[in-house]
Each structure stands twice: as structure tokens, then as C-alpha cells.
Amino acid sequence: MKRPFLWLTLFLTAGIISGQYAAVLPCTALLALALCLYKGIRERNAVFVLPFLVFIFGIMLRFATAKAPVFEADSQIFAKCTVRNAEFTKSGRQRLTADCDEIYTENGFEKADFKIMVYTPKGEFVYIGDEIAVKGRAADLKEPSVKGGFDMGRYVLSKGCAAAVYADKIFLLKQKRRHRKKYFRPQKQNA
Image (tube, rainbow, N blue to C red; front, side):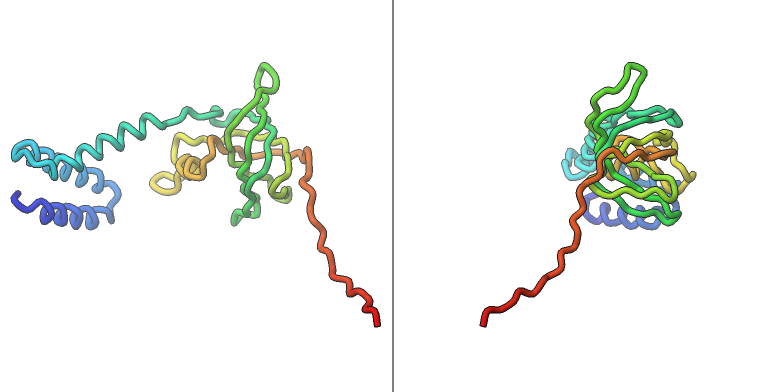
């Protein structure tokens, strides 16, 4: 292996080809890392060892930043939140990103400081800036929602939220003041 970049190109090409089949890709990547590590140690070449070290660092970083779920899956949730983002889903529901201020536990209301994603029932709509109380059940973020496809847990975490809630009922606590349109009134001109 006198030309490390030629081998890197070869492994990248093999990775792209095997990337079409999701089950084969991790095996190809591990084989490439193992060969690079073996050649790097044998030839004392840092170029071959660097991909392995980056891989190990990435795994350590992933475990160090992993968060425990805020709510148990399918548990009943009652939380007080402030809506920060609102968008509609294809099913006609509203997907809210909200800052959670308080959650209800066995001990009563406790302060909270994290973001949650809330799916509203059909026909109930809120606006950005509104303070709401959410009553619903927590979504399961550990298991992918569609096997081999969409993973809601990763989606929720990628949006910076700690939990997802399917709301049974939304209570509007404080409505943000909405600005009314002001129409221009022409003023009389002095002659």
C-alpha cells in the first residue's frame, strides 16, 4: 500500500456501490477501517491510522452525548409550553416545537428546561408565541417507527427536541397578541 489515496478512492467507490444496500454498508466500512489500521500499524503510517481514530472518536462522542429519554414511551404527559415553531403535516395535524416550562409529575408541577415536539389533534390550531398546556401520550423514540425507514427518534433529536408528544387535548393558556392590519388613511392636504 504505497499509495494511500488510491486505496482510499477504492474504498470510497466500494462504499458508494455497497451503500445502495443498507445492510452491506457497515460491513464494508468496518473492513476498510480494519485494513487501514492493519497497514498503518505495519508500515507506521499515520495516514492509514487516522480514519480509525476518527471512527473511534465519533463512537465515543456519540455515547458521551446520548441523552436518556425525558418521558417513558406511551406514558401520559401534562406539560406547560410556549410554542416556538408551528408547521402542518400531510395528515392535517399541526407539528409544534415548544419550549417546555413545567411538567406535571407525581409530586406536582416541576420546572423544566427542554424542547418538545407536539403533534396536535386534527382541528386544533395554535400560533407561534402562544402559551399552551398539553395533555397527551409520549411517543416511543427508542425504536424506529417504520422498520428500515423513518426513525422518529432521530428526527425529533435532529430538531433539538428531547421528546415527542401526541396531544389528546391542547389548552390555550395565554394567547400572543396578534397585530391587526393597519390601513393607510390619506390625510387632507392644506391648500
